[in-house]
Length: 468
Ligand code: BG6
Image (cartoon, rainbow, N blue to C red; front, top):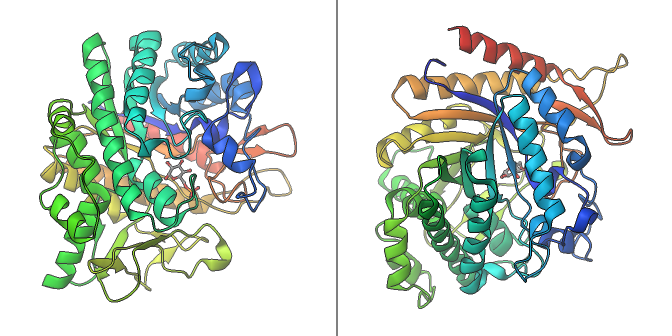
């Protein structure tokens, strides 16, 4: 991948998954704090300490820079800087993020900051996105962040994966508020997310900062099919529309995909919450860049049976279960028995990275794109000499990176790439046994950091790309 055009190379985290310090220095609780401390959390695992980024951030950013990376993606915990619903800032929370930015500056690391990565404040509530008033509250929170941090942050993202988050929260039920099969609220929440995104972009534009604003999509931006028949192509069209299209379309093109309203009507969704003024806002306030979190393919086939639902594997014992979304009457997930899978049954299919970026090139005006997450979850053990030999992760990254490079060569507007994750951290449902980090965290030993083989490999890869 050529670096002459200032390609950014880094890795990513999210506040709830890494910070810990859940009650420290005036931080208020988030809906994830509430959820993991409730009896709905059957595994009893929390991120109260996580990998303790709150006390290790200097070391983490230094290691990241020493690993040749020049950008760091992290998120701000809304309830750390606004612990209550009164708009009063928690200065200690602001100071924490200012210090993180200081350290980024010290090591010449470009921050890419997401304003909301799932962890709504408790006072907004797990069902907060069902209410219209949350859109204005979110935009007000973003405005305060833009004013406080200004262009110290050159890349802001409004929301991480509104699609995956709302599907998990309202279809699977594994994220708060844990509704299962609640299609009506799923659609409403998706819609409110995109109006809120436009409202936040409006606030951002008013300040005329020397910075760019984006939003982060989940799932390699396009669905795929194993057979090229009219029925399969139709299944793919619907899957793209209902999973990615409403997000990328609204954020980048300023409109929801054609036929979306009609399709939702047919599914029995009451769309009376849609207002013309919202659609006008979406049209006017589009993003500067899109983030795509790319892990696996979303394979679909024509609908055969079953209720509308989504299955996510986070238990390796169930890794043969078919992951994905079924929409009654339209499509359901498919599986390719010939491809490799990780221990949780998630497909390893590097070409999906190429396909995703080419779709953004062709269907979304070649919008500037960051691969905001790409990584491989593994069970890991330290060797007797204390090393972590994650060659499997290196192979994964190498193969995906080849395809991203090819997409860039083919004209896709790729500007940066982030490995998920900077260090081992909390996985939303799995907890700590699934590791993604370039740096190992020894949770039993004061969260000691130990670079893995992949950390050194990535350092050398970046150096090689820069020399090219
Ligand atoms: C992405 C999220 O969907 O996937 C991250 O943005 C998450 O927050 C990552 O950790 C990996 O997910 P999982 O479920 O495999 O831990």
